[in-house]
Image 1: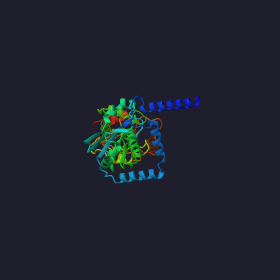
Image 2: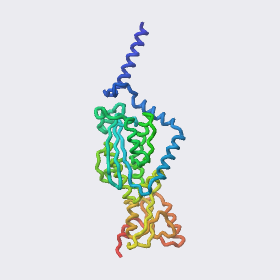
Image 3: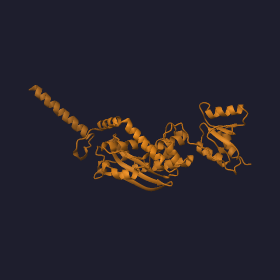
Image 4: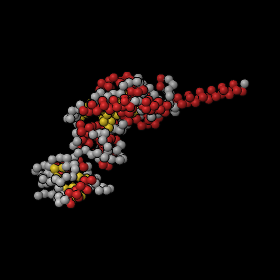
Length: 351
């Protein structure tokens, strides 16, 4: 008899525990259906991700590589995208923001609320302000998948960090849908390559947008997407590198720098000089290159025997360019090695 009572008590305790986990901080499960907690779902998705074959990944890479190879070198259109999620499970997309850019301008934008068919974590609600009431009667990701695919497929989709891409792929896996084949373009990588101060840290969208004086409502998907797109446009303006060339080089190591080579202004007072930059400058290297070119200098990416000026910024150790310049000087080549202050004086000289 005691054994039977003990078993009944154990059963009651287990039932109460499961019920508490399902409601999770007072939040009822969506549509009254008992769901797994977020950790279980994340684990499940991660396991499915691991099971994806190497061959499948390689096929994806080849598809993206082919799409990039088919891009117009003068392409000037892209979609900026951002998502918000209901909880830590990346598949729990509850808002999608889409902003279309063309010729440096916003031509369309759309905010879509999505029923994640999952619970809302209070911490996430505090971040983006979306809860169960907001998504009542809204479509699921599966419902809008066809429209999203038609809009995004084979196009450049700018995101800020890989989170949004991973969320889309997780949602596709959740509903057994094929990943959308588009050119996912991580703007945070562009930022880290464009501005030295963000190279290793501090490149969060909110920080960068604030520094670039971009006003937006953070953690609103369409606003975040808009901000990411504007940051990309400012990086293109800062570097002078085309969207096409940025995309082509996006997966290169972070130490890779966009080429700064430029022809000098024939009317500039330094026309005939061939200048190279090395080390960290207070301004971006692209801005320095534009200033030098305006003053007449031909800007080159590497030191050769034709180099006449090497501008040295802050460096922890002698750069390859600096060592090459010294080697050419030892061979009799005339190369002026100057710092940034001397460069500023030089370009501002009046004949």
